[in-house]
Image 1 (cartoon, one colour):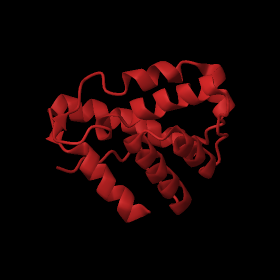
Image 2 (cartoon, one colour):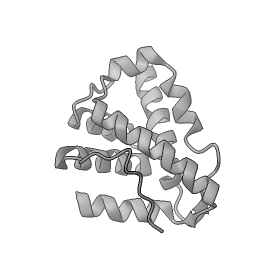
Image 3 (cartoon, one colour):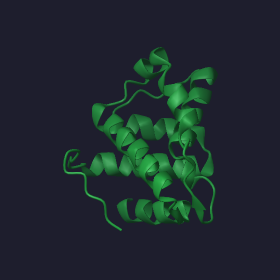
Image 4 (cartoon, helix red, strand yellow):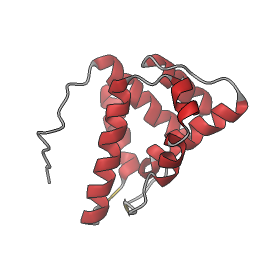
Length: 137
């Protein structure tokens, strides 16, 4: 199935694709230092304080929720809920200085989760995203 949303289209440059793939890979292996490095690679500011690193981990692991557990599964209606909680911490987000182009991808991902949950789609999301990340990287 292919779903087109012509109201939300943007070309993503190579640097951002590679940074996003690195962020996904870091989420899969639960490596917070790699998460911070990936954020920095796309122009954000990597946190250094332990509490901020913990929040970054919650944000990234929540955002990439479906891919952190291998095997076929459906997307839950509340997928990414933990990441949304971190997104409400404006001070933390401002400190990350995330570029708008990355926030755009986050927004797309949350929308995609909502559609996939509604469809009841069941796939090995970890394998699917891992294959994409290898292709990009």
